[in-house]
Image 1: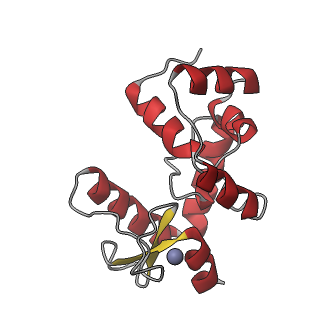
Image 2: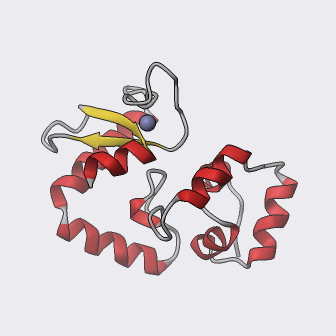
Length: 151
Ligand SMILES: [Zn+2]
């Protein structure tokens, strides 16, 4: 049974930007109808911009670990994936964890996309590590520029 704690609702809100209802349903292990009902109830709406970006993204590019809002997943499948990923990229995962913790504690602030400047782009901002041994030193990029840079 899914209890909607404030933490889970926060996670849901952040997933809405980048995930379809079907993907969200999968992550929370509920059916798609429950997702749309919940979004209605919580008055969470996708902005047209968000939908546009979402549609422009290659399928699967924003799921799970690849999503900047990834918080470790809820289902067992995601946990297995996370463990595998951690084994494969230990330095990367360590740097990400330290960064997320600093973000949560307000020690680091998410910035607008550096390349989109001077126009501020706050949608789908990703942290790019240049050096995993300096977890808090990152470049903030929108998904488009992040993908271009990391290609
Ligand atoms: Zn950008």
